Length: 351
Image (cartoon, rainbow, N blue to C red; front, side, top):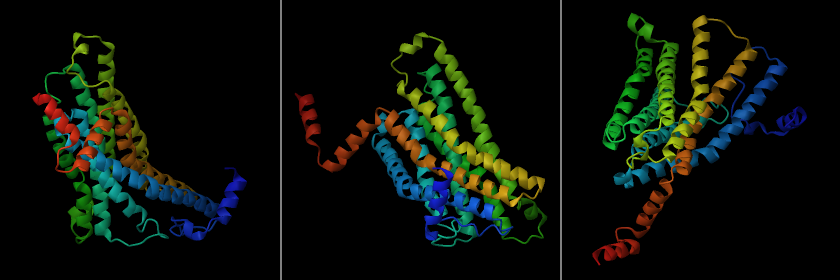
């Protein structure tokens, strides 16, 4: 789309179509800045509609299917399946948070409700917990895959142990998000308390999230990938062990790591940039504020999109998932009665 087509599209677009508003900027009413703001918010409105119409139902459906299929086939679950169930549960939470954010006060023209600070901090904590669970599940999946490649029969990365590890991931994510909860509590306490006045610092909480939620997992994933590449180059007698993971798991692991970091890196970078700018105390030009505001919201869309991209990757790369899904559908269709195929199998075994 060239500049002339963009100008025609901007002029012919109804005012109600634009979800995002430029009224939040009360600086100089520069015509170029206003046009830039309208273009940015028109793009954000299109992304919002696409997410609500396409991405939200797809993510909700596939995340729920991923969880149900693997819980139905507990006996055949592998270590990667447990981590992907963990990621899918976090994806369901992000799926629930995204529409509330898109239809809330942040989109002032389309806001269907106004939530208080209690609702906002609850959504923030849910989003932070889910993001931490996703990043650390991806990280530990990489490390456990290396352990399984190097020592396939030690059961260090067994399904039983992985389930307990996933429980610790959720507990650790909740403890890490405790700083946001303290920020909320102190915002309702008298500012005369020195302790709470020091805790009223959103930038400090964002810096903690960047370090714990992105820097630490990134270093651990890079370390795990280096170990995996090193062991793949070395041929050992264990390469023909039938107890090893399916080769498709390696492709799924690489696709998962690359996708997660591509989708979450912009979000954490914007948090880091905002923290740095606030800590410096410099006033930005309104033109750059609009650009930063646009990039910030665009990075949130990328983070939200991880909730529907990951189950699609799992669906199309994991070759065992379609068969498990067919078994679940057949079981639901037959109900409590045994299916004809199952009866024929039992009769064959008896004979």
